[in-house]
Length: 278
Image 1 (cartoon, rainbow, N blue to C red):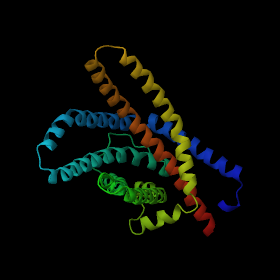
Image 2: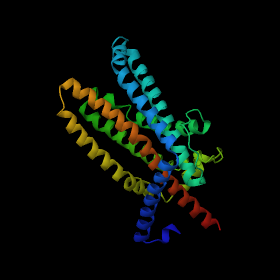
Image 3: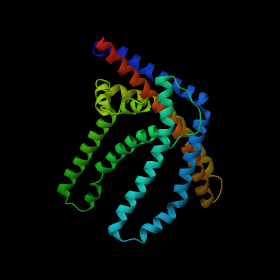
Image 4: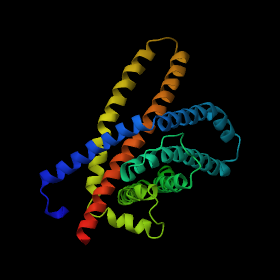
């Protein structure tokens, strides 16, 4: 049982999950190239569109009454978030199914699958929770100094509660991907993550760190080279194209790695429950 393991055994399990996650990423990249290519292409298109619409969007905001500005800004942010979540879900779901069902179906990202929409819905819900936790932020410009600490404390508490809930609910995503029954899915996923809170965090951090480190090195090197290449306008445009390329490549790979690690956490938690019931 998990509580009988030593610290070194827990570390070995965590390391094994990370290695399995990277192995699943390799299998997904080579086994489903169309999925990743189309995911990168759609991500690049969304990033490019957001870049080109930025000026027009700010012009629109400047021309509306102050009472409508926050609502329009929220609606635009929500729309962007939904589009982004759909792309992430369309990449993550096949990786979850690869790990948990040994299903390898290559093809273009399916943004209209009900399974993908269910997955994306919960991504948006958790991200909206972060938005709501930071909702009191404008109050800091208007409240008295003595009230500032209360507002900051409330936001920090809300963010910590959201982070805890997000980790405990993270096993909901592989459950959605493999079509576990919707009834009681949230409750069962919450229960399944009991005793695995820190493992989910640690394995995610260990798995993502090498990827983030490589991205940082590449970004710094290319940004330095671009900075020496010409005029300020040219540098800015080149940096934006580079940002689009990095985003298009890194986000599908990052979400696939995250899905793989989460799936292996799900397998471990599910197997432990099965053993405990035997």
